[in-house]
Image (cartoon, rainbow, N blue to C red; front, side):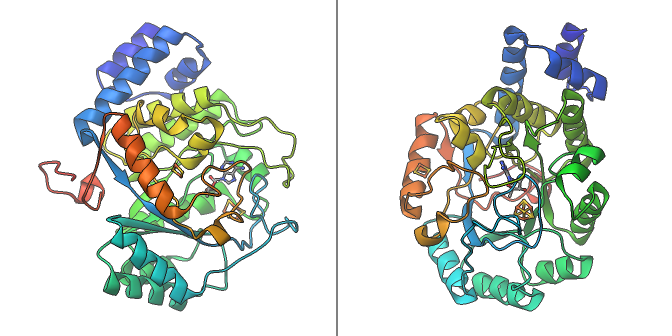
Length: 353
Ligand code: 5AD
Ligand code: SF4
Ligand code: FES
């Protein structure tokens, strides 16, 4: 059966839930080496060797939600909280763009302080003063709010589905359901955003069948971007003491994501780089084509502690910029110079630089 699955992958056949689960159940390293090689080929065919940089600005760590796994959850009273004033957000974004970064990712917890008007003004001010694409990652909002962000200049929106298992989702999110999350995702697509979804790997209680459901959801939605990283246990959350996801699991899921979504932008995430010193390099070798240098000012950055031992927490933004560029070159890859829009929105020649 496994040989047949590998053949299906090579023939670019649609994968079934049963097949993905069987693959994930297999510890066979030669089999996985073939999966990794296939994922790397698909990345190369669709994106070439260019790696896109997305400059991350974590502008507020307030959050009104209580996701069980996350250090920014509202009930984590040990967490020091900060908010960057709108002017400072714009000023930083303009500076990030001056480093040749063509996408700025504005990320925060779900923080009601930033009203729709405030966010829209920030978006317009950045667009007026910098030549850059903007990705928002600020959580669940109404369709009207999403539409306002889009009209004010946001190009893309990241909202991970976190896990495609309705029961696991419900057990980790006291304030929401998977259905609500999927509705947000549908709203974002229908408005015209480039949309990013994705999940954590190795969540407590997550089975191979659950992980197969994540891959199937990616296959079905064909998102423009994918965000996938290991769950990392945070001692200041109700999941304290749980096992974290492993680099092996994460690389398998990254490769499968690339295989079912040949044309999605797929980052080597910070969490992947945080559980393994060379995690990002390893992810770049099994399908990833994006990295996200952190440009959050240092005095704030050390407080954006979703999980512990986060990479680059004491590094200056400009240091990450240089470091990441070097890392990409060391891997024999090049740094892309364009906006790195979704291939859906690029010319039909597949020109992505
Ligand atoms: N480990 C790994 N990733 C986490 N996230 C939140 N908490 C953790 C954790 N403990 C991820 C979620 C969220 C993104 C911003 O960070 O997937 O969508
Ligand atoms: Fe808030 Fe996002 Fe953390 Fe959930 S994962 S608590 S929504 S910052
Ligand atoms: Fe931050 Fe290397 S990417 S120091």
